Length: 451
Image (cartoon, rainbow, N blue to C red):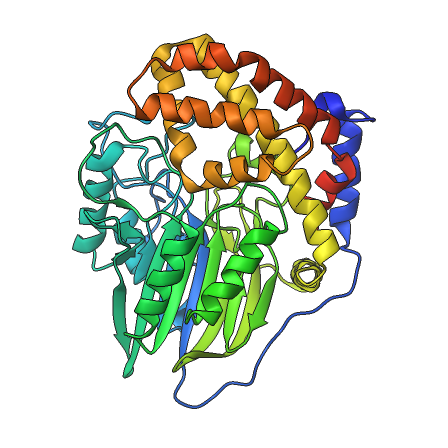
C-alpha cells in the first residue's frame, strides 16, 4: 500500500494510475508448462475461501462457476480463511475477527474439496477452542486439514492416497491472532524457515508427492517478497512437489522450479467482496485456479484457469478478453520472478511500508489500553514480524525501530509492564518511523501492486 502523506500526487490520482497499469500489463510474458504424463493425477488448487453466509441455493453452488474444472480433478484443495466456530468463543483482540458460516465444511465437501489449509492469520480469531471446533467440523465432513501443529509445535503431515499415489500436504502461516501466555492445545503451524526446511525434507521422504501450502506475506501485492521467492524455491529443492501460496487476495506469478511448481498467489477462491477488499485492490475479485498433474516427485504439467468473483463473492469463469487479460497478467508477473533488481525494489517498498505501519499500530495500541498493547507486543514473536524486524535492521535509520520493537517483545515475554517499555522506547520508535517515511518510494510501491 502507500504512505499517503509521502506521495507527490493525490491518492485518487495514484489509484487512477494504478488502474491504468492494470488495464493491460506491460512486459514480457512467460507461463511455464510441461507435458502430461501417463499415470499422473490431477490436483486443482484454489486460494482463500471464506464463506460468511451459506448460499441459499443448493450446496454445490459455492464453486458452480468452476464445476467443469473441479469435476475433472482427482484432488481439490484450498485455504480456509476463517475458522468454522460458534459465537460462544471470544473474538480476537486485534483487527477484524472472521468466522466462517456453520455450513462451510458441508459446502466445501459438496464442491469436491478434500484438503484445506487451516494455518492462516485468521485461524485463531476464535482462540484455540474455536480452532479445535473448526477442525471438528472439517473432520465430520470428511475433509482433511493441513497446517495444524501438534503439542510439540511440529506441523502434522496429511496423506491422501489417490490412484496408488501417496500425496502429502503440509501447511504453514507466518501470522495469527496473539495467544495468551501458556495457552495449550493444537494451533496453526508457523512458517519458521529452518523448521519448514527440515519438516518438508522429512515429509517428502514419506510420500510420493508433497504439496506445501503457505499463508504468508502481505496483502494486495502482485509480487511475492524476494525472500519468500527464494524460500519457496528452496522448499522445492528440499522435496516439495507443489508450493501453493495465498493471503495477498490477488493473483501472482507462477513458475516451474526443477521438477516442482510454485504458485505465489492464487487470489480469492470464494470471498465476500467487502469494502475492505474493494478498497484494498481493484483485482481482489480476480483469481486463478491452478490445475497441476502430479506424478511421483514431479509436476508433469500445470495450467492456470482465470476466473472472477461475482457480487456475492462466488467464482465465475470469465470468457474472451477478460480471461485473456488476466492470463497475460499472470504471465507478466511470472516473468518478473527472475528479475532480481525488480524483486528487490518491490520487497524494499513493501518492508518500508509495513515497518511504518507496525510502528503506527504499536503507537495506537499504547493509546488504547494495556491489554491491546500487550496483545500487539505478543504478535512480535510471530515469523512475519520477526522477519520484518530483521529487515528493518538493514535499512538506513530504521535499526533503532527494530531494537525498540524487540524490547517490547522481551517485556511482554517476561510478563513485565509493556507500557513502561514502550514509553522508554518512544523516541526510538518515532525516529525509526520517520526514517522509513524518508525511504518510501511510491514508484516501487506502485510496481508491487501491478503485474
